Amino acid sequence: MSAFWNFKFNDTEDFIETFDELPLWSAPFGLLLLKHIELKPSQTVIDIGSGAGFPLFEVAERLGPSSKCYGIDPWVHAVNRARKKLKNYEAANVEIIEASADNLPFTSKTVDLIISNLGINNFNQPDKVFGECHRVLKPGGKLALTTNLNGHWKEFYTVFEETCRQNYMPEAVLKLKEQQEHRGTVATISALFTNSGFKISRVFEEKFEMRFLNGTAFLNHHFVKVGWLSSWLEVVPQSNWPVFFPQLEKNLNNYALKLGGLTLTVPMAFLEGEAL
Image 1 (cartoon, rainbow, N blue to C red):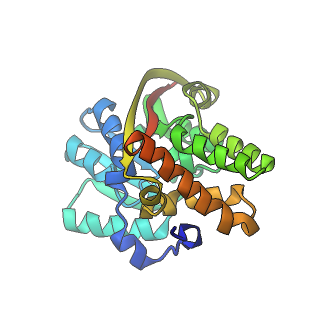
Image 2: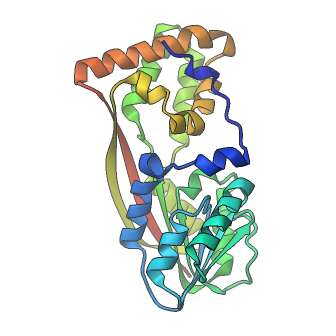
């Protein structure tokens, strides 16, 4: 068994130079966004949570030079990487700004479209972010986002919960359920829109599958460790890690062996709101 639970994420400039989440995670959501956003000429567009530049640059290039696109993100290393892309791509209609989405550096009622690909997952104060989006959008302007939904990786979390029960850890079961319930539904995300002065204009739900050979492959995948491991470690007391996580890995491997692989389901949604 591997000791994947000992992984430590170091947020460095070197790390961001090799960071590429697209094949694993961001691409399906970004494609859903690109499938449904309205492409109009001469728009002012903000991508909140733009990270290293996806889908910011893709949206900017698909809109063309008549539109101006701004990428907003507080992650300094990602912002620096996006600025290197800006230079290399010669994307004259893109500007990268290191800032937080809960305090957008734009004048009120000056923006036509705000997009966010999985950004809502990282908002500490989503109500404030939605309020800021409403403030800077013109009347009739659109906020369009994509997100994963409650039920994400349900196959994995079912095995995780069973492993907690095998180890007589009822508190861990409760913590795990809290983590799962924290993910939004179409109804709860729609409420964020309407509570901030938006009218829901369009909603599209889809799902995709992520396939791994077994639990060992899944738990040792670099992006799984970067993106999710820390939250799983919070569920289990640290003194139990050396026993619990090898058992979780074993249970996932047995599950995969029975089914010919580990297939995880990801429900996702595109939601668009119009500023009233």
